[in-house]
Length: 461
Ligand SMILES: *[C@@H]1O[C@H](CO)[C@@H](O)[C@H](O)[C@H]1NC(C)=O
Ligand SMILES: *[C@@H]1O[C@H](CO)[C@@H](O)[C@H](O)[C@H]1NC(C)=O
Ligand SMILES: *[C@@H]1O[C@H](CO)[C@@H](O)[C@H](O)[C@H]1NC(C)=O
Ligand SMILES: *[C@@H]1O[C@H](CO)[C@@H](O)[C@H](O)[C@H]1NC(C)=O
Ligand SMILES: *[C@@H]1O[C@H](CO)[C@@H](O)[C@H](O)[C@H]1NC(C)=O
Image (cartoon, rainbow, N blue to C red; front, side, top):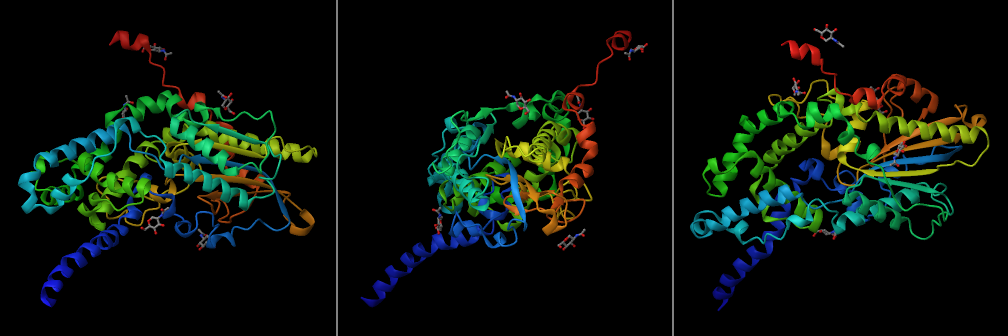
């Protein structure tokens, strides 16, 4: 009797342990999901309390004897569903595993587990905001309001702008909802203003579209890495775990399997069986693949990537200027709160324009190992709900012996040291001086114009 009970107890104990083991194995992957990272990866204290201002809050307290005049936040939308393309690819991979289910059962437990996994994503979800994404935005709004109570006080005017993408409009609405009825806004307030020329400047920049977006050779480093030795190793490992011939897999299919692991965590808060295909080492390789793409398409890879964001950069400074002007003439600040919701593709070029997260060497297909400690890690910079906040202060000169107008920048709610001073607060005039060249000489229209083709010269060829 006793021995029989023990015989029963053993598998059930293993059954109980399995989710724990899975969770332990995949916890190691969560830091490598790149642009599909949860916001909690950069602010782990939010796992316990999504409204906590965290351990950094003490260090991010408002500067003494200063009052905030204007807050400008540029946000990435919250957690979203996969795009239709990703869902289609996942469906393909899953169907392939289903077809081989019978053959795989004995030899390939991983393949059998994945065949049994329910493919619940539908193409119609195409990049839409997930319920978790709404919570990301509501919580972010509440934390910002808690950090800057004077700005988010009753009857302050909020200007809310958004990209035209559904996930951004939904994110804007969720942010507004998060502020709640305590922020009684003026009756003239428009709900959300769609402004793609600011939030999707990349679509409107002809030079970017021609040189980068629609140019296959522009992504040559990304494509080379997909075929390179590091990816090859991951591919062979995954193929072997799934008992698939390696020719049936490619970098895109392996990446979609890895993305599914990230989506299931971000959207459903579960550790999916897809995660068990990857070790932490594999995850680092796949993270690099994601970062390479961001680097060449949105970051330092090509100048036009960041130059196309000049329009947004200048808009930010125009509104800061206006607030200083209002303050100097003792008028109420016309735009105390400006919140704009866009994409990772909105934030990354802007941060590159300002010179942040720049490595000494470019990210390339052949320097994976040398880039182990790189600054350019998208998951740390632009996870879901990423936010870049500029705060303009008016400071008491007698008490602070500082310039009257000061600024701070927060990325993902953490103070960023400025490049020119390595300090987390700067005189507004010093910041403008440091970015003088961009402010004076970067004009969207000129930067984004395609070089004029000399028709006469071509005719003569
Ligand atoms: C978008 O914002 C820019 C800069 O503030 C402004 O010039 C433009 O008129 C806005 N576009 C729309 C459609 O509101
Ligand atoms: C495409 O990108 C390559 C590599 O940067 C560049 O040399 C080439 O001029 C680009 N082609 C076009 C049409 O812009
Ligand atoms: C997510 O799952 C973890 C572990 O199962 C749990 O502790 C946590 O409360 C969950 N978070 C949410 C937001 O449901
Ligand atoms: C910037 O400041 C930080 C913290 O005070 C310090 O650790 C770092 O070495 C400084 N960097 C430079 C380039 O001065
Ligand atoms: C176009 O090319 C022709 C022949 O090479 C040259 O004479 C002419 O100056 C060029 N025009 C412009 C606007 O560059």
